[in-house]
Length: 184
Image (tube, rainbow, N blue to C red; front, side):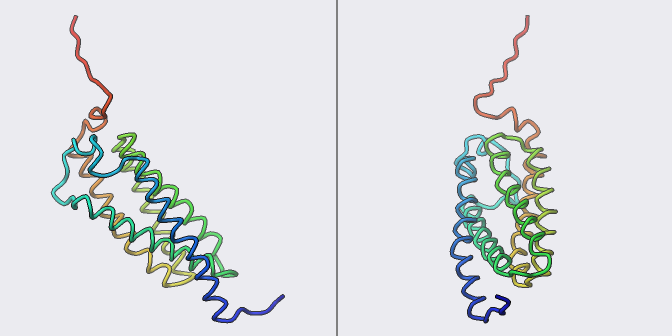
């Protein structure tokens, strides 16, 4: 009952969790983007002015796929760290950041709420930094795996801000919303 697990048992626990969590996190990320019709194929997004620093469309798919895989591995490291001090809090932070992350694409691409999306990504960035710190305290490698995510979120926040700045009427560009001016 009170036996300590061997290194191979700990490694196998991580592998089992990684086999479930990496594809799950990746699938959730892909699903969020797909349901929101995110990216350059979105007619509303295509109509917006983009900042000069906006990467080509294919970069987003590649980068987000890599980031979701890294998040899944980091999560598997923490989930498999049974008995670690602060583990439950770290997992709670991860869950909150993942929910915020998955909410951003529908808010930006489907609801066309550029300003609200900027607020959301700002909160997301803070929660991800806190998650990274919590993960780092349990397993340094788990914290390191989240650093590219933090870096990308900083860029994504700047891009969101620039899109908002360049498109003050972004919400009125939403397909299906017709603006009429009738004088009587």
